[in-house]
Image 1 (tube, rainbow, N blue to C red):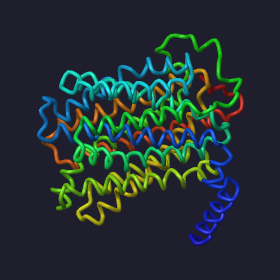
Image 2 (cartoon, one colour):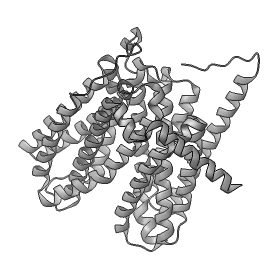
Image 3 (cartoon, rainbow, N blue to C red):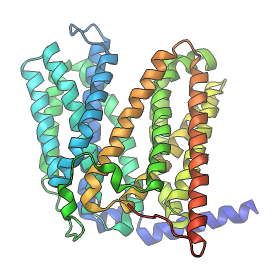
Image 4 (cartoon, one colour):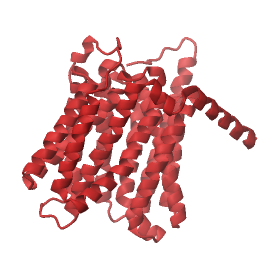
Length: 424
């Protein structure tokens, strides 16, 4: 039975690759998306490199009176505060215009610090980077439907997850290398020059003609993202928040788990992060075939449950081999969840409201990071494995509850004579 099922899945995957030309021919069929994808990888790499360069500098014998914790706090607060304004700006202009604004702003902010380095300039630079990062991420998500039709979104979402994971793997290595070899000031100057190349690239991207792009609703109040989401979308955001909190908490407690539970050096955090990133790329590339066959919500729920199970297994690992295997599984399922999640919202959100909705998603993500940091700080006396285990179980509980509610709503909607609200 298992052999027949595996053969069927393999045949389905081969049929999918032949139909879509996955992924090289997909890029050839959507050249504007290829440019957007290359821009996404480049911007993600440079953003991660700048953040790590600053953190490495602050963690070393820095003359700047700021710690990495204050850096993360400033950046996170700026991202949460700026998100609604970013969403409104995207909807009032266009996603591609906002991406050009972001690149120009990155160049100005980095060069301003290079011209006059010091604590006051860094205190300004960090929240500016946080705000620009939220604007970039929301505009990038909103720009997807300017480059591909809706029926191609699932595969593009998988490629987007691969791009994000690639940036998280490559960017920190480049940032650490620049900070160690050139120093913070020169390293940021190099990154500013590379941002200029990205600005030239994003200026070349041409949007498709789409009659959905504008509506009178675009001039509504800035803080109106929630009213564009139905109950199902809100419930999926709850699952997303729980998963993002668990992922952010892992980074805070993983060193303690490695040292005290596994008995390995905390240096293994670096290789494990890269292992999770590579697995995330694979998960993003594989998942679209299941999205097209089983649907976005079903795949999302399965991936979320599998991700939480992998986190539970990681927290209970007692050997380095088991720890490495479970973190790879966690990365794979996280990439699959992300592909299904963004494919759902790309199809569910009206184009005139996409900036506000995707900015809200990024605001939820930033809030999850702040909550995870607060939990790690307030519950520092608890063993790291126990804290991760508890949050992973909460993530699994949220997923099961949302899956049951979604099933009940679907069953109720299928009943004759029963009316349900299915749209915004």
